Length: 413
Image 1 (cartoon, helix red, strand yellow):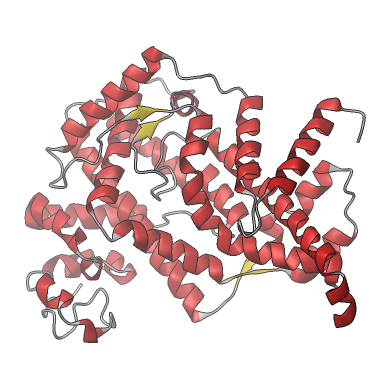
Image 2 (image 1 turned 90 degrees about the vertical axis):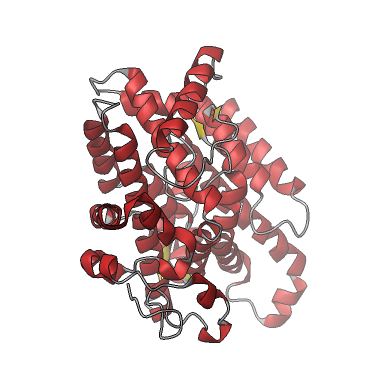
């Protein structure tokens, strides 16, 4: 333990961070998690964004936003385009990670505190050992925070912008020069075309997240609901902690491998939350792909090749999926991207841009998983929707989500 001064200094910093956490600040010391993430990316090299790189990215995002005006009726979502280093990406996305990770982190910390100090003790002994158990829970929070920080740091080394995982991690449209460089490796495509294509995707996502009022809370709420249904494998956690060598950082890392400790409950509510999340992620990505293809057509010769590269990247399970598996036990992958893109294209052909984008006006208008199997029926059944009736009949209680019900119009999806 004392053989490596740098590791010893890092351990002391983390211990000080743990002790400095204010009471009632939650199960995880997020300042510590953020510091670990930033140390992780700095150790691998995180140069500041040069002025020339910043200018190129801002120009690419601005030009992409202009091109999107011809491909969608949704207004611009890019007000202050930015170029970030990996450390800046961590700093600006931590608030959303906190919202996504705390439900499962709290469960892990409670379980870990019991496994370390309270397991097997009679109630009287547990009461006497209360302060000690509280400190043990703090240590559990420190270890979970370390795991979260390492996961976010790992993701920061590979992301391209703020929307790689399909969820809105920031209100600001931004790209990372380091992420673009990593993505571009091995591609025999001009750098300015790659940058502009990625800017189109970033700007398209932000049009959705900025101008579809319900979408952000709908997606984040689905992730939170799914995370609440995750259970900690208590027996496995206790087994690993009992034999833990606190002088071995690698052993701690392996013991906290969430892929081994987190498992979903097989309940109907859990399955419904997962299905809703997967479908909505596919619809978001399918719409973005359709809009970007339209905007790039005739302007970017490499658009088709870049689109296929991104599809393969998502299909093979990129860094986002691994990070979510670590943080909330969720495999985040839009499995039905091609079906969703085909549905949006069919809507566009049948109703034009206005009719296609009008579907985002209300969550009850959105296609369901069944509609991805039969897009033609969804396209034909929309014409009698009446948003005002949906919003003025709360007694419906959302029981007819995605179908319109017998009061809000007879067109079904």
